[in-house]
Image 1 (cartoon, rainbow, N blue to C red):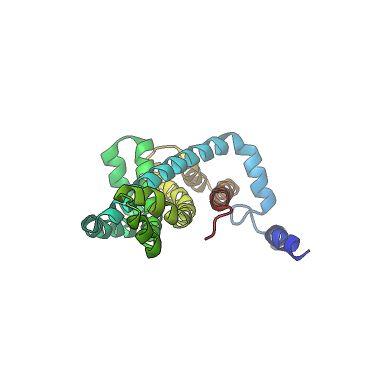
Image 2 (cartoon, helix red, strand yellow):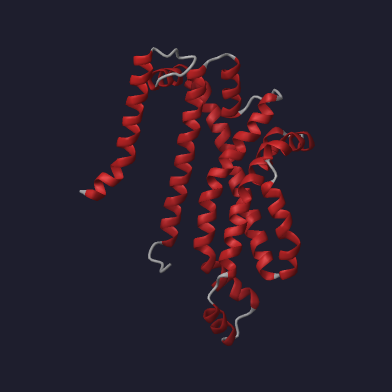
Length: 253
């Protein structure tokens, strides 16, 4: 009973909040161009889904591509840092600097330098997404139990055998945690990059549709695009959570 209520609690809260929102809009007679109600947002989506859905697909394509690139780069750098203290000392400060640099500040430069819109968007989103994978995987590789390392060494395991058969499996929970964080960050990075590209006239993705709707004061349409982005983020996080549970099922962590 309690478990069932716990699972339903987010939906009950969401429906209650939507009902209160719609009631407030009706009761206060708020114009839709100031604050649309949920009904106005749904109507805006239904009237423009042929444009919003392809835009969502474009944003998700950038997001997934960036997440794959961030995973490859983050794992490679984490393994290299675990294998060499010199490489760690050389790379880690620059990775931190890249992470704390606002992507909105460097996105225009990347778009100009790359000169290929899709690749430029992927690069921007990858910069935002790769650091959690790098830091979490590196932490997992560094936290390999010393007793198991000694056991492998005593049995004559090579450095690469220790890496692939002990350290990488031990780092899997940390990697998956970083992957869940990076999944949503990749979406954020894609949207930010699309905002910059959209302001320059490159029409692609939901971010551009949000800019377009704001210029035309089509606020319900803007909210519809924002709802699609929010739902996409929730779905990405949930799917990566399912992947994490599937890979770690039956594992003593």
